[in-house]
Image 1 (tube, rainbow, N blue to C red):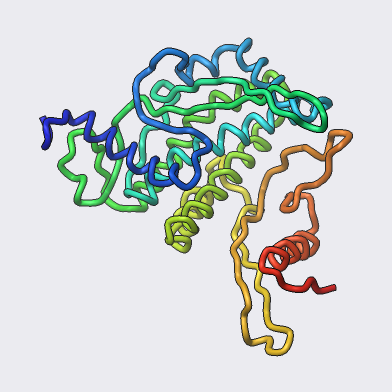
Image 2: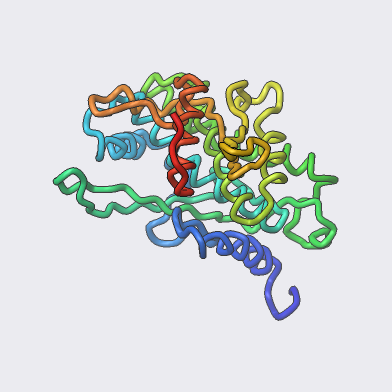
Amino acid sequence: MAAGGQTSNECAASLLRAALEALARLNPEPPIDVGGLGPGWRNTANIWSDDGTLENLLAAQAAFTVDLDRKAQAAYLVIDHSMTVSTAIVVPLLAAGVVPSLAPEETALRFHTREVRHHGRNVGELKTSFRLLSATFSAHDAQWAGHPDNRPLPDRAALLDHMRRQIEDHFKPLIRRLHRLTALPPHAMWRLVGDSVSAVFLETGRTLGCEEQAKADALAVLKQAGSPLCNRQMHYFDIVIRSPDDPGRILARRTFRSRGGCCRYYTSREGRLCTTCVLLDPCERDRNLEARLRAGLGLAHTA
């Protein structure tokens, strides 16, 4: 029994829950928590092995873009899930220095649909909640050294390598199944997972005031040679706005993520390339981002 009458599992769950709730107060979507396999929840491993459920999830991706093809549906599904999973693992790392278990057998999903208006029509929007079923975590910090649910690691490098393997093991069965169902190449899906991980690291680091540490951690996870998460296109870069009267004076600087994957939205009739699409020329991408940054700061746009 731990201090305050809590069991070790309750203490660990409280630790993970506190880390997730710290960011949830600022960004409540997607809903992520720690708990048991209660009513309405399904084990993730069970979902990945159920073609009927996966077909329903694929079809739901076309709710807003009705002519979305099968490969794009798979891309959307991978993006949506990887953003959720990335939040579930990145936030505890940056907030508390711990990495929870992402094993499909130790995570669960719950789905519901809400009706929204989109371009003059009612659309059923699929919403997903994610739950960590295990209180087990890994950490290298001395403060967790004696915790019964900690699987200690020697240093941060080992912790980040463990995190990478957790992400890979979580997505391998999903990517194999989606490739079989839609023919979207596995490397395309892995690029989308890496894009989500890098984006959540950046935004979480910015929110928690540790952006440089977050970027370094992300690159350690995503640039491991031989990992399916590794691709040369993904990196971080800065957009810098300088004073027109004094180029040495920086008016604004913001870090962005260079993506390695493509969501395939451009393949639909209404589609186009996204602002940071990997298919865009980097110069055009940077001009678009600078224009948005200037607009957000109320600065005049430059030709």
